[in-house]
Length: 275
Image 1 (cartoon, rainbow, N blue to C red):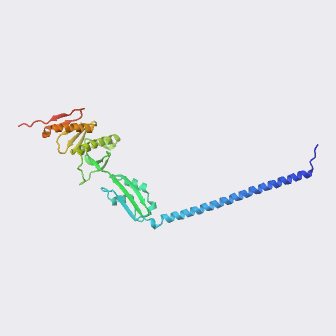
Image 2 (cartoon, helix red, strand yellow; image 1 turned 90 degrees about the vertical axis):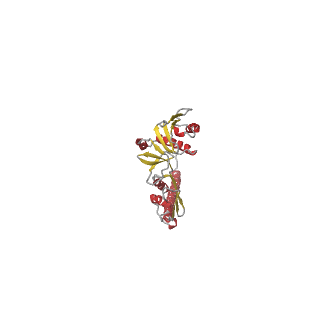
Image 3 (tube, rainbow, N blue to C red; image 1 turned 120 degrees about the horizontal axis):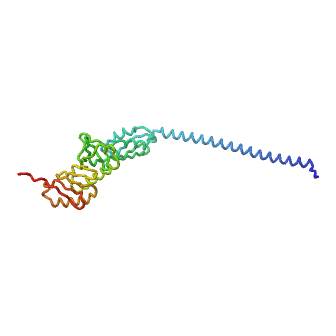
C-alpha cells in the first residue's frame, strides 16, 4: 500500500485554496466593475434624457418657432379665413405643434375641398395648398346639386350661385343616396359625353337618364332630342354630325335622332302644322 505523506496533502490544499481565492477575487472584481459600468451608463442615460428634455422644452416653448404667417393657396370658392378657422391654427402657436395630417383631415371635410396639403415652413410659416372641386354639371332632384368630374355630388347649389352647367335629370333619390361606384361611373360617362359634345361647339342644356342603358341629350340651340344609347360616344357623335349636315337649314323638322342602333341613325320628324 502506498502511503502519501501528510506534508504533500497540506501543500496541495494550500495551492487549491490559493487558486480558489484568486478566482473569487477575479469574479468579485468583475462584478464590481460591471456594477460600476452599469451605474455610469444609468447616470449617463439620465443625463442624456434630462438634456433632451431640456432641449425639447427649449424648442417647443421658444418664441423663435411661433407661427407668424398662415398662407392659404388655391382657394376660390372657400376663402382663406374659412380654411384657417377650420384648421384651428392660431398665430403665436409653436410651429412644432402643428399636426399637418390632422389639419388635412379637418379641411377635407369641407364639401368643396377635393385635395389639401399642409406644410410647415420653418421657422414661422404654415402653408395650406387647397384644390377645390370643380362643378361639371348640376343634378336636379327637387333641389339642385353640383356634381364634379369624379361623379361626386358634393354641394347644394345656393341662391345666386353659378348654375350654367348641363342639367342632369332622370336620376332617382335612392340612387343618389347610395352614391355607389356604379352610379358614379354612369355620371362620369355622361359628363364625358357632355364634354365631347361641347368641345366642338355643341352646348348642352340637359342630359337625361332615360334608362340604365339610355341617355338623351338636349342641346342649347338645337331643339332635337338626341337618343345616344350608352357608350361609343365618339363614333355616335360622328354619325350625328353627318346626319345634321344633311339636314342643315331644316333642323326644325327633326323631332329626335336615335343613335342607339349600330351603324345607323333613326330620325323622327315633327308633324307638319295644319294650315
